[in-house]
Image 1 (cartoon, rainbow, N blue to C red):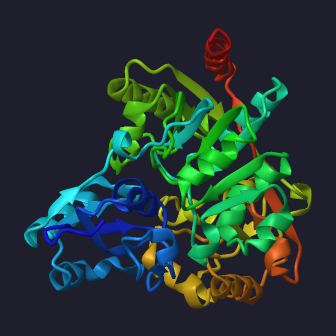
Image 2: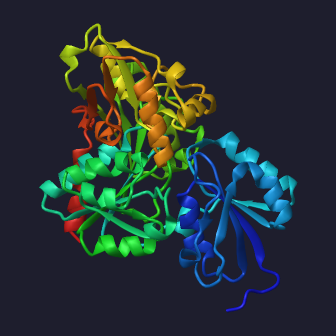
Image 3: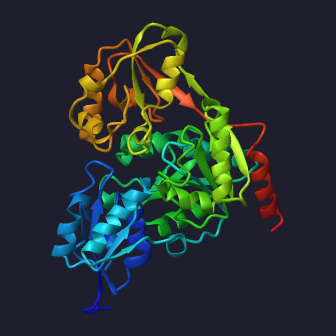
Length: 446
């Protein structure tokens, strides 16, 4: 179908995730709109690429450029943009409205596509695990949930929020059942952080760009689908049960970030996580704030107890702490589980900031809240090399790694790597299991 001359010209603001899904669901086959560009932010190295024609469809024979978000005004003026679409996550409400103001000042409309317009419908039951902020612990909850379902006899497939940071043509539909699958797909450190723990439990993970095709592939292998969300985004697939994880260490962030507040209001179950690390008064304050925005949702509680390999050997020894990247960068945490575990073990934590090189040095400038830990950034091979060089330059006796990916296998440092591991544990006073059992009973009843 030819595109009308009056087609609305659109730019989609994104970070290589929801933006591509919004395009696929709303704009790809719509001749009344012309997407003239994506923009990119948050993730290093994802701008300057092109969304390929093979994925963009017949209305886009030349593909679609992906440009830096900081060039928004230039893009809008030069490409005569009518509509600016916001499509990424875990930013403050003020951040969203500043972007809206920039768009409005140029005369463009500003759009936030919602769940009804972008959620796909599954033929299998879907349980979604989402969060109010990055780093709240939703992936450990998703893994705990998958184990529970498998123990009850269900075939489970995990559908992961997208992380297409490489060659987009290769990432339309991805299936990970082994480490070899991840190596063949040239997964980044950030991808491996999310996929490896699921695969280690024997759960197949699906991800990619075309979530309609991904959904069909996952449905063919499972009785129940588990959506393992990214950042604090709402699901791409309409859930039959939606769990929203809130971080007890950030009790004041229920209604401060987009789309975390929407996620909290949408949830069927609210789960306060990391209760063992937070004062009781802050847990109570968080529960009150959650009840205020979503009084219909029951509130469960749980923790992420941390175990550290070789903890008894670390007292008085100098260590470098490597933390999960997204948690301590755009997640806003100064440190994470690795710092906590090393401190409890009596280690002397060495500040890596003076020894960071390349993109790791730049990360400390971009995220000044970071404490004396090294974020496990590895969105590209160059970043993996910077990570390896930064570790090598820090004079320590051992490395404590709290990233779910096996950093020791990826960068092979010339010193011991002790892994800090964490898994979700229910709080017996407010367990999650009875709420899930009620849902599963409703499925069995038809």
